[in-house]
Image (cartoon, rainbow, N blue to C red):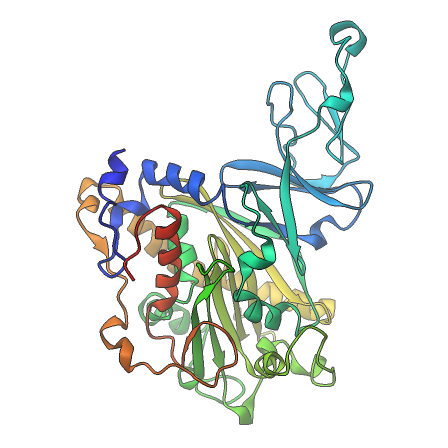
Length: 447
């Protein structure tokens, strides 16, 4: 394969060949190697609360129906009739007791079983309905999150998430649980899915240039309403968070304001938490982080990202609010991605505050979000450069901080896992993503 030739000497320290950001051969390999063998985020338990509730999502290029059956169990099925392979359900979400194929009328219940075939007694006399069901996909849940896996690996979702759970628990458990606000926001753009996923693995360096306009337009300020200077926040990055097999699966960055002016609790209106005791399943150290943290960002391989930032505005004159989202970078072709974004808030927040978080979040992220437009404009230019044949000769040099990495202290007293440093001005976060990507694609990783 021609695409393999320019990747033979892939070396993380020398960079990732630019052509990998817009190449049909590499894209095909990603679909087979990455999206067919790992746990992929599908949605939220909250989206399928009642029997018959369903959403249609994707794993790689495969359409998947996630549905709660009449028996109360959540399942996922390949969205294709077993007769001729016709797409079974076009609706993005809804409630249904059955799914009927529009081609020949084969009907399945919401537990995947074939329950009806027109003129069966004439055309299919020897055919037993009980012999056929929709193709079921393995799923598992972490807190309110549903993941699916097309592969044959016996690694559980919990083992796959591995060390990332220490940080996920701070967001999803210490908060008392998170809920979604509204439906997911979607748009398609001409950039590679890896640009978004690796950026959210905490590429703090890009904010200085790319998001300068966010400050200039007044959507972010170097002075918080709590009185501290935001560039002076203490911060950490936790990189090379491994799964149970020792493979890097995620990286996170966190920021903490001065203790005398803490908003904490990810900026989610601390009065709702200060009188609450530590939830079960959260350590004292994790809860202390929850009480102090104001921002976090991170990616779990391959394409699930998180971002929450306290004290943001939409310039409406209404009170400031956190930006808070979970997003999915859906690959739909080389150099083309569909971005899915869910706004998330703690369950304890009243609806009026949740609505305010939604308003502020969508002013920053989404098709017309001020931060989104900054990012996607840059990522499109990467895919544009990667479309030419010269992109086979040069590499993305993901080397920030490497020359002085030995001078960056490791936080020895940090209780959480990973390689943890007291700064976000390096590129170990994106390198965590790319190390796993190279491993998944079958290349030797020089480490």
